[in-house]
Image (cartoon, rainbow, N blue to C red; front, side, top):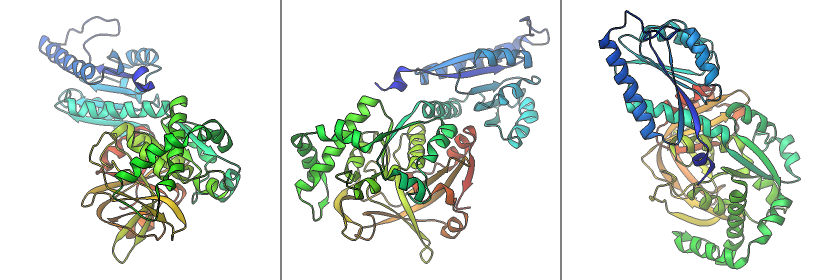
Length: 460
């Protein structure tokens, strides 16, 4: 059981109407017919919430005006955000919740609740508050409500998530040289914590080697290496012995994750490997850990780790960190790196992609993984600039996989609006982007707003 199953998130659920005065006395102009309708709406919504999300502590409140709203706000001070059902027109209460600055979702009843939304929503958007508003006849529609609850749940989980970076002496060079490309791994820690709430810590490679890596026996690792060798579609220019060190790294990281209760792990792999402080590349270890539900960050890329945590909590799908490399002649982008999820459709998916263990980078790098990712599918490719609080999005249609030793081993090729992407690229989000199967653009726009992020559609 992970800590998200042990610790309940709290979400404020507010029903707004004029059924009672501030003193709690029923209003004379409220008819029995409306009271019946209001009671049905409240009952249906509460029943759905309690049945679908037993892991969440819903804190309920009823408001008729700004005084009620202020008192309710005080009582709900520790909730992640607000889910407001504007059942009936009422004055001034919405701005109290909106101006709290917490993620706020307002679902207004078309017939008698939409007026309050119209008077508050567009103004809140212009002022930059993290708010989403809808006006609908079917105010208690469970599909809509469940979607928004899941958004708030994702935000809450991000604020509780724990990530760790394994770094070494070369990290200072990374900070100065902004490696991986245009990324300052230390400068981003506070930016990501402020933007998404993720708790990020570091561990020296010396401590990791001493306390974890060096304690893994060759016999333990051999079982893992044999399984990788056996399950691979092909093994090119590698012997079983070549996979022992990657298997030891996998077991060491797994032990670290368990002991520190981590959601994500990153390794400053390029600099540590070439400095002789990391004995093997983490590609195979990350492939296996991703299949087991752990977010793994190549090259200590915190931006990408944050994106993958968001999408894990929101959609339960793994992401593929990659270097997007455009080809204008073909209107294609080659998304390449040295490993990718073999479970691209979901952390719990049994539909696994074939993989080949092979050299990469012009035969200079061993233990890389070529994954044959699904084709003829739409993917969403995401970047993040936490300092400017910008979420970058583009979509592509996957058309093929390429397999060769030029640069990285996995090369998934997608067709996209390459010219627009070249011209609109958010350079300060780095070169890396994270690819996810499915078209998630609209949901990302919603949760991006609730997180206070600006959405940049790089392909529009």
